[in-house]
Image 1 (cartoon, rainbow, N blue to C red):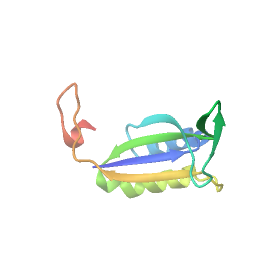
Image 2: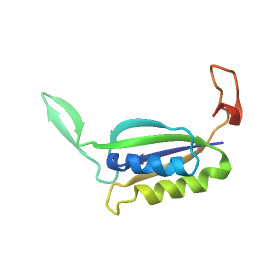
Image 3: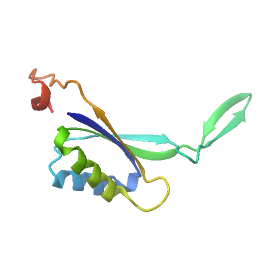
Length: 112
């Protein structure tokens, strides 16, 4: 199993969710996040304290999928979330050592 974490522009969320549902992804976790990439943001000083500002709003999608689905999921997200402009996002793929369903005690692929 693999964890796929993707950070995309918020207005692309519905399109990505629908595309992932069409290829058989059965669940996902969505978080509203803020951050910056190469544009960096900037620091301001207010009343002697330094603050980081200009974080860009994004949406983070977390998925756990079988290893054989990774390429299909990554290409689906890439194609659907691409707007052709700076800040379209990133995709990260990580190994998952285990998964457990709390209610039933199922583990592995059955827990996802």
